Length: 325
Ligand SMILES: Cc1cc2nc3c(=O)[nH]c(=O)nc-3n(C[C@H](O)[C@H](O)[C@H](O)COP(=O)(O)O)c2cc1C
Image 1: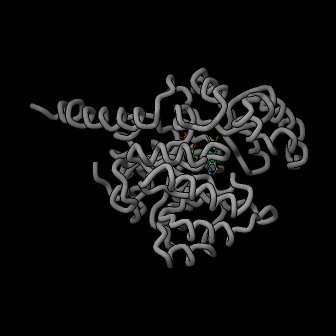
Image 2: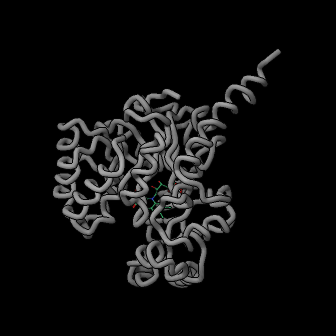
Image 3: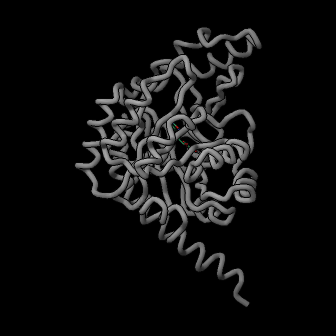
């Protein structure tokens, strides 16, 4: 399948693995790229720019295919040394960077000057147009269904994707709620040039996370995620657990008076404990509604091959067949 995204990124299939804290290590990124998609290392999971350089080198050892790095721009008061992380990205020969969070504009020239393609993750048409105007090469349009931060507009992909298609000139991939061939074909029909998956890629053999995490995703239904931190305008979709129920209770009790400190121990430092130790109830961790569509733990190759094979059948048989007279 050829789309503007496969052409731009030099990949075989229009499938991207979104950056995920404590999931997007070299093993997963390489497995996705080796299967013909675009794997992405999560930059800030690496504690220092030097650690990121090592992770990139490790990924180069595991694949000859292109892979990317995610750089998530956090609120200014917690800003990591982004210029040094970008040094590591450039020195590591990375050709694609997925940016997310705050406006990445001040960091774009250095990356674009060396030919890096920038895919900015956006949860609204407004932000997608802004990304286009500051020179991003593509956007990843993240609907309300998504695991992680869906923004504050609550527009699901059935509306958001065609809206993005109507407004954008640069290519975009559909993100949030994407799991299988049906997701891909629907996303393409709505004007996207591919899809980005997060939660689906956690439940794969190569995802270097504790088996408890994979089993929790397989066991979860589409009813099992919750939104936390809405009261702080930092909404996050997470898998429900007792810690999440506690956060929701605190948010309800505190109302408009809530401060991040009120829930800090339930949201900070949680990822290594969940992803590496398998301590599932220690706090809130991102998970998409798409968990309801995930029932197995395939290899990335099996997952991507299956999606592409079934997508072809959907297009050639189901859709084409409907038109046959
Ligand atoms: C466990 C987890 C951690 C994530 N961490 C990040 C992150 O650090 N930076 C980022 O830009 N997106 C992050 N995301 C969002 C994903 O890159 C992707 O946009 C999202 O998962 C898409 O929705 P889906 O889960 O329905 O596929 C995370 C998602 C999950 C599930």
